[in-house]
Length: 230
Image (cartoon, rainbow, N blue to C red; front, side):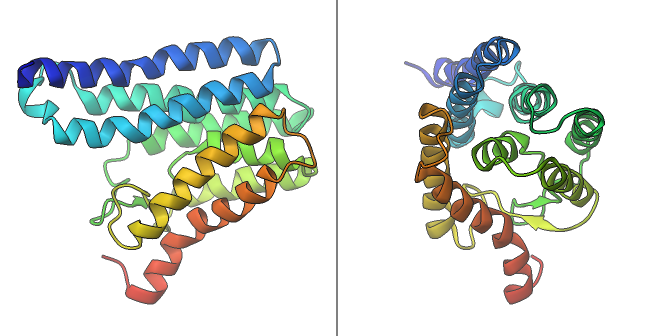
């Protein structure tokens, strides 16, 4: 198989994320939240793999007719923002006016952030919270905090999107990658496990989600404190 065909296959692999987004949305409108999150986890895995594949097979060189960055952003907005935002609105986690606040804040802040050319730092981390609302929603569904806590988490994370607070990319941020990548893989496993058992309150997956989420949120600011901004 020549280099051009391999590059196009990578684009097609990325595009499967739209299929998983559709399946997640269909589950969401039926309020099958565990199934929705399982499909979002599958899409999350695809998103984690397609970037390294795209760089390895040089898609910009061999398949330039398709804009891989734009393709990825379209799918990410569906799976990272739109669907989890809907889930938080339609579930009982954020009832009444709090759900309206959350879905408006999530969608408005995220669409602006996705279009911001300054979203990446020199070390390929993110400047501001990278709109990973799928990750936030999984944790909130697992822990079932009060709606005030859920609303505060949403508003605070959305606010950081317009700051220079650093959030690591587990694959592309080189510093601490030997730790960050296994933690991100563990988070994915815990998220799938939590959804598989329909967020059973006694599941150990919930503790795993908390520990790995705290690391992924804190690693960027800690790197800045200990090593300075790259």
